Length: 409
Image (cartoon, rainbow, N blue to C red; front, side, top):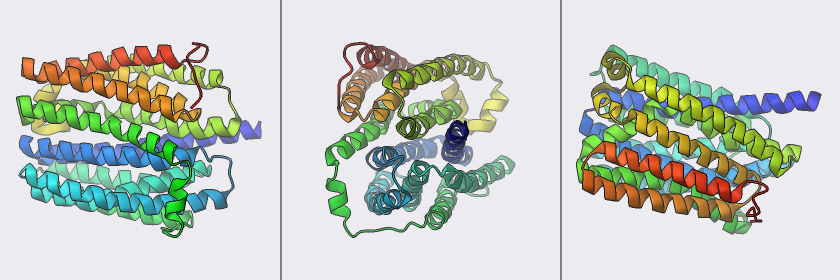
């Protein structure tokens, strides 16, 4: 009984931490949307997507292997965490260069520089979060992510008082400072520091699975970047604002669903759950998420303009037009996340990557064709919805336990 209570408490704390972590990311998008022009927000949207892609790659290649160490000793986890932290910082510096180049190309160099400062700290904090959750100490992550979220919320409150106190670049720099504080706090709390010695040898261990997990997680966000970029090229910055804005408003559900791997993977490894038990748990969550998303998406579409503009500023009108369709896309995305969480818990890196590749190819091809044919953000949203729903059905049929298609990694 005590073990069960401990497991539930750990799972709940991990979920709350993911809520706080994702909330800080969502709040900064809202703050930027409040103080930015439509063109500035369009550029910032692409830079947010680049940051998210980098975070996804790091979570896949560093975070997932860490979670599969659940049950190992603290010393073993801490050793891996030190090298994961070093890897995150090095990778962050590389991505920062891309952020600067993107900002310059979009004519928003200042915003690009601000993201370049933020990215290494964001990735470092994420690596440490996964480490303490793997060590069954999610309360450490929750403490520091709460600090980050409260700081981000205060900044959003300031933008509600006045849209002219600071610009989008300043908002991102404040976000970066909060991320740095959290990274330092977590490193001290878990007695972890960057460790370069033996880093190459550490990467060679299970490098194929690290590579697959990293590519899969990165593709999830790269897909968003490509679709938004194509929509921007075919339609204009308003398309980027519409697609990113609607996704931002639906962020609370993305936040909750993104906690699935952090809860399911380490807990199923510790408890030794069978594939069927893990799958049943995930399906229950998927059904609840689907119903809630559809209701909330419709409610947002019907919301008064005054409420919408308070959330997204000048970008609300563009986002509202695609809101119900993006909600349907999120239903498919929720089931794709159910599949991803299941495959991660079973260590099925090759099947996970295959499913993600199939979805990306379908999504990019369909959305590109619709963008250039319709020249409307609504058309791109329809393409996203069709892609996510069709692929979720296909991969569930293929990998569900008892289907006869569930293979080893």
